[in-house]
Amino acid sequence: MKRLHVCVWAMMLCPIVLLAQAVSNTQVQEVVALPGMNKTKVFEKSLQWIAQSFVSGKSVIEYQDAKSGKIMGNCSIPYVNSPASAWHINTTIAIDVKDFKARLTLTGTSIYSTHKWFRRSGSDAPWDVREDDIPEVRKELQKLVGAFTLYMSQKSDDNW
Image (tube, rainbow, N blue to C red; front, side, top):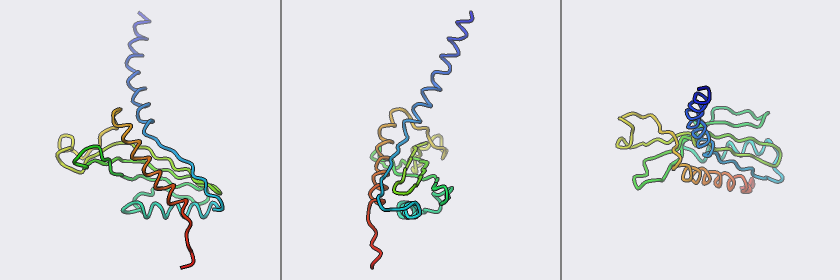
C-alpha cells in the first residue's frame, strides 16, 4: 500500500517537473566580449540598446544599478508563429556587466495575442509557453540576443 502512495505521488509530481523543465528551456543566454570597454561604458551602452530596441525603454527597465552592473526588466517581443502575426512573447531580460563583457539573459515567460479572436474566453490573460512553442520562442529570443551583440560590438564615433 505504501508503494502505491509513492507511485501516485510520483505520477502527480511528474507533470510539474516537466512543466518546470519546459519553461526553463525558453531561456537564452549570451556573453558578449567587449575589449577595451570598461564596466561603466558597457553599462551605459546596454541602457542605450534598451532605449533604442523597445518602444519605451523606461517601461522595460524594472531595476538598474550601475555599481553592481545589473539591469533587469520585462519586455514584449513579436512572435511570428502564424500568418496573423498577432502574437507576442512576454520576456524577462537581465543584463549583467563587467569590465570588457556583458551577459544578456532572456527568458520567454508567456505568449499573448493582441487580436481579440485569439484571446482566451475574451480574456487578456497570457498563455503559458507550450512545449511545441519552445523552439520558435527560443528562435525569437535568439534574434534579440543577436541584435544586442551587434549593437554592443559596434564602435561609437564620438567625433561628429
